[in-house]
Image (cartoon, rainbow, N blue to C red):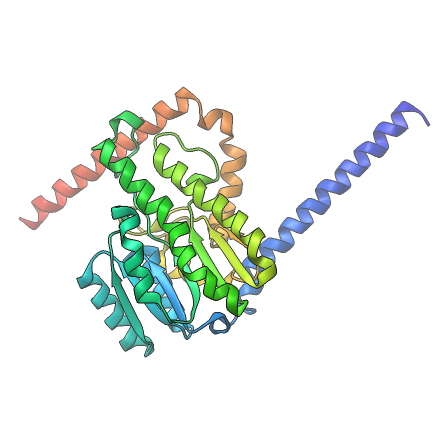
Length: 322
């Protein structure tokens, strides 16, 4: 066999391998975002109660409403008692489901978890949504330019990192005993690859991703599903309630589509739009460029221009109201 024939065989196998990989990716996408609209897991089979952290706004509130709509009683965990009561009332009136509230501030660290454990004791918790999270600024910033950096480091780690394994520790034993359960951990697309100017936030969210994947591997044989959800932009307070469009999802739409993927995948961007954005950015914005000093400067300049324009728009609206 000649050298040319060997190269032709290797090339043929390579093409077939990539075609199979493409076909598998297309099937997984079709299953996640098309079949899931018609073929959904009955979430009530996991247990009576769902626990949602950061449940009074944004993605957390949307998950709480969607879980109640699908027939689960909901335990809302957040720091504002007024917002907790309001959200609980909405769920009772709209869906007729039972609710419980737990008021804690996740930035306080380990001291809050005995109180949470006491409130959850004796309940059949089938679903946990680890959603609570925070950013340290409303704009891109170099590490040393983070406002109140010493305090913010502790707060972000307590809220974004510590809350996930601690809440999981509280509910997982009951799930293992019943041999069924679902843990949903909300990560972020900025954790898929390192994101300069969002250094701490990006780092905390990659912990959520790795923790989810490792935990799913450990406990899937015991009937537990651990799903990591890594969204792009969703219109919430964290994103300053951006206008929704084909790129930016509303929180209720995102929660509905993301919950549809349960049972179809253990890792998802949550919706087709965000998955396509992930694929596009992976091609158009490679790591070597995104991590370059040139791109970081451009990103910071873009952020500064955006905030200036937002400030002018606010001033214009104030003048108009006068």
